[in-house]
Image 1 (cartoon, rainbow, N blue to C red):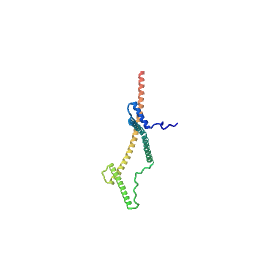
Image 2: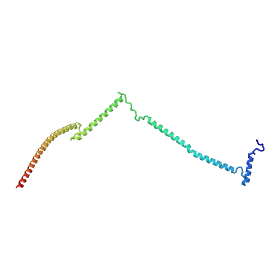
Image 3: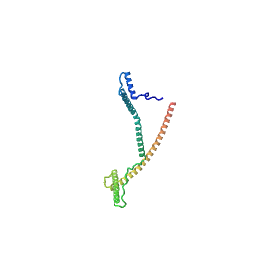
Image 4: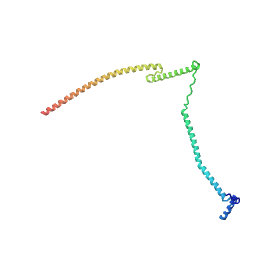
Length: 213
């Protein structure tokens, strides 16, 4: 059954004022529309802001963690790609290409050939002079002329060869004489041993004869 207009619910503002009047009668003070309601509203807003900031602060590490992980993955991927590129890339040659040679028969070619020949001759002369100086220090001579040094070296080597031959002959003869002397001494030693044994036997025989008498 529908209510009549007079029996319908009163206006909300009138009901709010009526509730305030009743609260005066019950609590002994008047609640204005902005009192505890506003305070509760402010406290509610404060609680809501605190909770929102707390939730934001608690959610921020979870949000930053994926970002850090993604940055780490990117850096690892870049380093892996760089390592693979360095491993597969061919080494860069550090030597310079050889200088272009002059054309055969040109003036530059003849000049380089002449300089090379001079350098070879200079080294050859240095080697020869060094060998002659060393040879002069080994032989008994005071000559400084290269030809004289070579001649004295030849004579000295021949004399050394003759001395070596003579020494070999002499040492061979001495060896034979020494071996002969050793054999003679060995025979003499054997003879002396035999005479000594015969002397011992004679002594033993004489002792027995004396003991029998």
